Length: 541
Ligand code: FAD
Ligand code: SIN
Image (cartoon, rainbow, N blue to C red; front, top):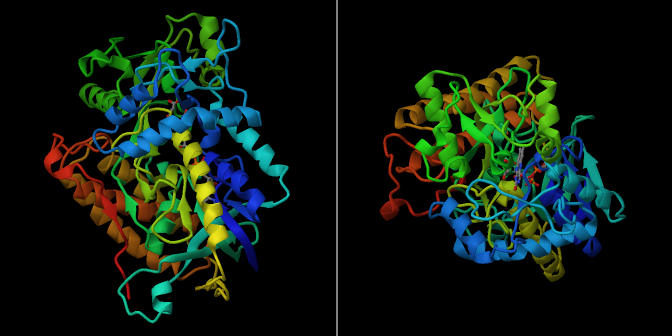
């Protein structure tokens, strides 16, 4: 079946939904999402959204903190623009109905939290359920809009692209340069639909599932980055994978984050003997930037041979802790940990992808009519290490800008070169009888990425990872083309693609900067490496 729309939005997190809401009055919108609509990283966000509301805060300070955290690779004009647009975008969320926490005194002013790398309290939050509060309001608004169709359990397989250069008869060794929509698998029926769109937006989130241990939900398989790369778009800075220092360490806890806001409220990292160790690593101690804290924990664990360190907030008022962190408190309690009296066992885990599909200041990729917003994009805001709570902010600001630009682009289009799209070629027609290949490869990638391309890297480990990924890629290519596609196969192909790109990017960068640490080159090298790592799929004629 073919759908014809003006805007195709892939993803229902803060980025995709915000974009969709802003373009809906200008054209028909289809939003596809691979699981239930609320199953997004956005929905699990705890700490909040960084923005300048505090009496002693200023745009200059937020800009400075962001640049410092980004270790020389942030784009200053992007940082300036995002920081300055923040308060307006957050006010808009409040106008739409998001109820952020107010201070305890008069319940009038926003209650602002503190997180690592911030010199001021500036984290706007809704208790420790910030993402849920935002996601719910955005989904409610989408549900009440008549110009939008929401397709749940629809997973995008690949973008549909077209070459304007070929059309003009110019013989060039170039990629296709215009996007006409996407092929999307309806996972409940197994049918692949053609979504023909004048504007296509990747809002597919991050890629935490490339790693064995992650704070991310299962949807985070880097699909947007992989699809864009396969289509020939530029991707950048994929070596900068952010490991959150404090995920709950418990055999039954899957992906549960202990927000950095806990350290913002006085939580202290201690080792198994009860010793606070962060002062050995950074003058900002527990509120140092994330790359520093994650590496410090990694070092402590390797030194002691222990499985985890502990986050101790037992010295705080018990009622305050329960009220400020109801989500984290209850979750820990369900595992038998009362955080008001017990230090919480924690470990670092893959959390956020600072790199992604390279976009300009309006979220446009270098393929015409293809945008990327949210975590899947690389805007230049985060550089080599994202400042805490700058992700939701970036998603909001860029979804707004991309929507404005996309509406203009739509208005300027005349005619449509994308007519007569070929239907999906079903390739192999038989059902797979070896699902074990998929789960085996999936498991293997995640494990070697964790062991060889994690918090601390080396040339030898990167080389090992490269050999493994090449073998698996070959196997997937052979296997993928032999059977009917399923969501598991699509995701496996994508995590393998993103793993390969991370390994490639990390191998190229011969220095240590921000989140990328290679023991062979422990220093930052501004002479040669003060630049992005940009990749594009080689052209196959
Ligand atoms: P997401 O919210 O992840 O949404 C991605 C969407 O794309 C989903 O709907 C998914 O189903 C869909 N999708 C993916 N692939 C496909 C496909 N092939 N076909 C169809 N649909 C697809 N950041 C902050 O700034 N502050 C915080 O406090 C904070 N806390 C966090 C806590 C946790 C536990 C996690 C995991 C992240 C946190 N982050 C935080 C990061 C932040 O939440 C994410 O970066 C942000 O929510 C990403 O939003 P997004 O819209 O880009 O993607
Ligand atoms: C957290 O609450 O610690 C997550 C914040 C973020 O990822 O920015």
